[in-house]
Length: 71
Length: 269
Image (tube, rainbow over all chains, first blue to last red):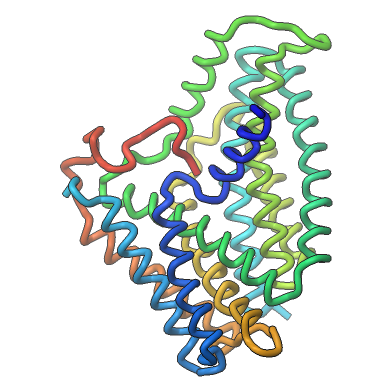
């Protein structure tokens, strides 16, 4: 059991890292992109740039939440 | 032959691997100089063997089981998370909200811990030095392996990725031998900032392409301009990070331990 906990902890630390908000920001933006693809917008020329902007925006939000209260 | 993607691939893998190798070297040097060189080397070699097995298994599994678009989505997402973690720290450091990483300080902490630890001998080795060296090299090495595999498979150019990482490893070992100490002169914070930008750039590029796995036909999506979009993405991350550094700037509070991401031994990239 200790080995399993340690194993899971290792991969959590490795993938999610120090700030889980960053991982959530990426997943939220890409999930929105995934929904757009499923809705048939994936072939649009504007799709990739818009998803890119979405990731930039969620990163900013994650960072602002991170520093909130310390300004 | 040398497209922007290939050059970017080589540079990204080299820089990311270089930073990880510097951190591994610091740990091995601390164990060797304070405990036992024989045990530190044994831990390093054991970690390299474990890494080789991990690389073979992970590389085979990823290349065999995942279709191209799914592979791009998975590795792109992971690279994007890694890259933005590095970029977050770079922004917080540049804006004075987090202390700069100091390899000399890291070396001092490691040597201090090594001096305090008790002596336990197993298989003729100083077990503390062996285990710490093994863990340090393996953990930093897994990151290098992951970067090599993901970049190599996604760019379909594994040789360039491997050469980039090997060159970085060789350079760190050679410089480490000559320096005979931690590589304190390496501009590690700047390197980490650059690596964060590159990982975020490639990660975003591949993750969006990989979303095509959900479309009819399950093929990769295209960015306008193809590989040239990488340069636009790199510029966008650079611009955004500089804006954030200015917007979040708080130089007077750089030493404030209450600041977000204040130095913690466990928080490292």
